[in-house]
Length: 112
Image 1: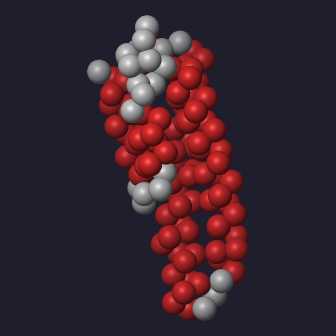
Image 2: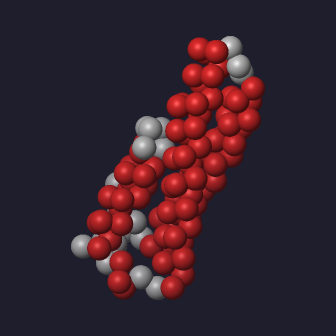
């Protein structure tokens, strides 16, 4: 099977399904931490002069971002993602709600 042909969701092996579940979890964790950073911590810092929230949420987001990219790369190799999926997942992580949208669209692609 070539890199451009991702197997349908129902034909994935148990290991591939497990990798996909880990990617989904990381999408939601990374996306949520990014929204917390942008929607709560940054406004608290710049509007109310309370930088403490950024000092907690910022490093958490950074760790989750790196973990998300690692899990994305591992999952891409295990389930033979199309070439455009990996850059789409990375770009999506820089956009608010991007990881959620990427996860939804990728699973839709896998379902056929």
